[in-house]
Image (cartoon, rainbow, N blue to C red; front, side, top):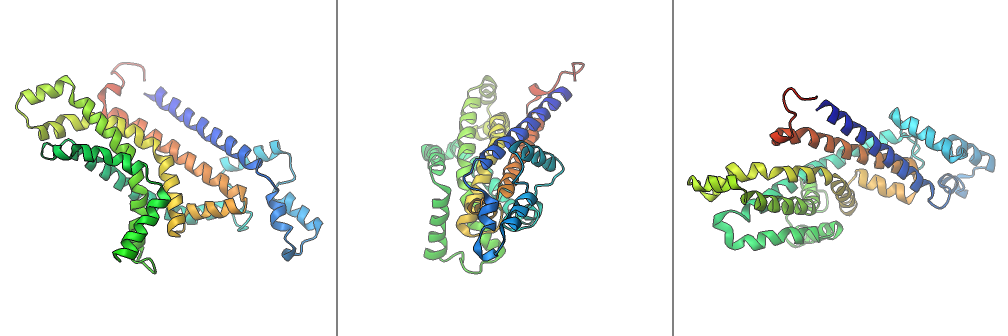
Length: 314
């Protein structure tokens, strides 16, 4: 078990290094020099010597391999550098915007899980068999809806048509409702699809037939015997959905004009703020690694077959 955890930890470090290297290379090949673009602005009135000093201060005059090594060592210390546009440490920008994104992403993921389980169980309940095909078709509809279009449609329906949620000066809770729903609906689709297929597969197993033969109702069989054994594939896919969750949150923040990593990323793209962009990439990669490590730790608790044998190698 210990060996497996160390191996997973090593894989996580490899993923982080690959994400850093790939993002560094891709951001460096962007056309133009971001430092020159910013400080050659005539309104700033800087001389060529002063502009060169700024390039030295931001390390833009160093060879790429030196920039790579310096940036990598700095990130290992938790130093993301300085924002070219804001002129403040990137860590401060991340710290001030990350809570807003988490307040959107975490409730959205919980709602997505609730929607997925509701659709999957509703499609198998005996009393709703006549709606089974409809429930099984909804995830296909959900996953085909672009996040930005869904957000605009929800604003049009609930804010302008039904006037249930104000657009101007909403309360903090009101301002979160539509963004959470916008992120949750596309995320719930793959979860629901995997869970439906897993429930169908487990329902055909011999132990389920034995439970039915003992006289248990279909509902009791579903809750007591089928559900627990169908959760493992869902747990696996939930860990992989973090990237889609973050992307959905970033797009949704832009659509609804919310502060967070979405707007920070948009501003960084517009201004070629490489330090901020790389920090956002690394924060996302770190979240992906941590979530998947957590999934690996939970899997043996749900499936005893994955637990190490007593007396075996640890």
